[in-house]
Image (cartoon, rainbow, N blue to C red; front, side, top):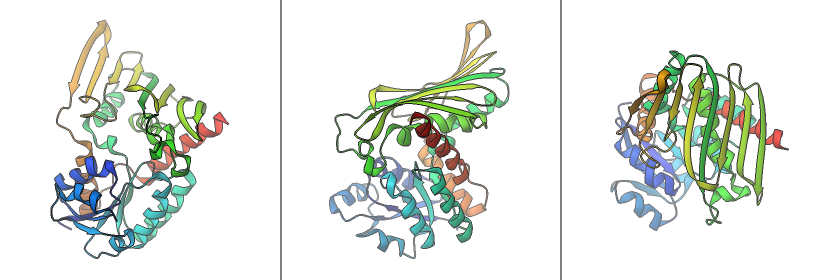
Length: 321
């Protein structure tokens, strides 16, 4: 297909601010439809995409024959259900992270993907950003010598937003499901390794984890991360070797938290810096998805990759009791 016609299932704020504009900007993509019963929310999308077709129900959008692919930004607990419905309706699917609340739920999605021959993927955008592709290359190329330790932090404070789905257990809330996928998944992506042991220390409020610390041992390095929904905003990932340190200063929300930048700390206290001011990983993600549909080339973040990160999160919850 020359152009992939996209529909969005639900008028989420994140979709309106980030993914809908990205679909609208991406080469080989066309933002064609939105499903929402709210005329007010629909207006936020038609403001930058005047020709968008608005459907009043999710099922009506699933039945629309002109739609090739669906982006699903629904609350976490609905991801598996509507990904399955979309695949059964013959649509390719890009679903927000986490695509499932437990790793074994992804097995059914993998089976349905293989049965239908459609592309289904988690919207794990960071792997499409050149800073992460560069970091992965530098580590593999020995730029920091032997990797010994990895640490990461991702935090924000939404305690005042009590109605936020991230603060509700019934909608799959919590820090680890929301942002632990980044600190854990990025380490897996950049190193190609899986943890052998996982420990966790978790603080809970209202049935959701609000601050979680994960300590793990990978085959080649030690690891720890902290994610929180109750702390001052911070993002950072560090890959520490015996011959250097690789530091990403805005690893997860570049252009929002700050400019994407890699610092390579080398012997003699030298620092080499690389910046990525223009990259938009949301646009890159959509273009990669469309490219896979047109060419059949593998998509960079498979359901199996998403399952690996969710399995670590499952182990962290189990370890914390």
